[in-house]
Image (cartoon, rainbow, N blue to C red; front, side, top):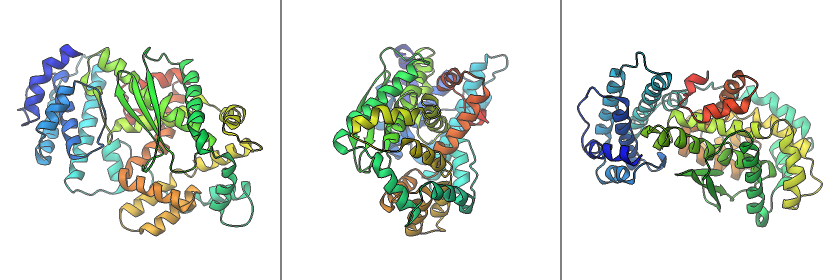
Length: 425
């Protein structure tokens, strides 16, 4: 990797100043210019680069002299032209897919540059431009039958969201036991994943509890098979959420996905485009979708409920809680997940004001107003990114299960590939 990095260093330094003329070149050189493009966009939008573990000199070059937005937009157009000029006739399937992958990610970068330059899109148009999938926006009334089923499951007086909150209070992990419970859940997620997927020998992570975040959990991939997992402890965390976070942020979720991509492409093949992860890109649809599906893969059926009752509940000091009923509630609430796409579309377009949006989120997420307000903060920050969770999970699940009975093998293939959202349909 260092030899390859040094061979591109002069090129990247120039690319950070002015777009190169369109050469007749190959995918390696284009990939290096793509990395420069993404790093420079990250200088205009903090958080756009979710992970970078390429040579530090490349980041330094982007930081020292980033192009302005018009020049970056022109650079993205140039990269597209160069990619289309590369012939893959007779090339191996992996090379054909590599070109396809780069074209999709340059297109997403170009769309994000248009947004940073002031262009506005509808929720569905934005999602398709950034992530490569167009979500269906159903009327909220389509979710009312699910609310009716939950009402029957959690009967009693008062608003349904209040009843659900009161029922789930029995499963809240006390603050002084939160870190050991989550660490235990992550360890179990790792054990179950390692039975099926060969993990890099040096893979590792650190765990921290944080606050004042728009998200509930985040994996910061650091390179060299290492991650920093942060959990937002501002709001109550239930036992099933410890399992969810352990799988989603860790195993077989984001930590494993990034570690396998690094091993497969950056280390084994020297494909430098995979050393950078632009958050608003098709990569996130696969990342979030596989991380959410990984929960069901690691804990199929009622295994999560049984594990919570047998292991996490005693560790958390929870007694006399109905885990089977909570699992039924969770399955129903999963069917409500896409309601927030419609809610976000109405809010981001200005059709529905903030207070009403918080009420809608509380109603269709069956949560408290303050938790709904936190979710709205996430929507304001990440916008159409929210499709990557529910729609991403369902799309990944359908693809994995079409591959045959060995779902873990299909999952490993996905996590160590350049498969795009459009390829999962």
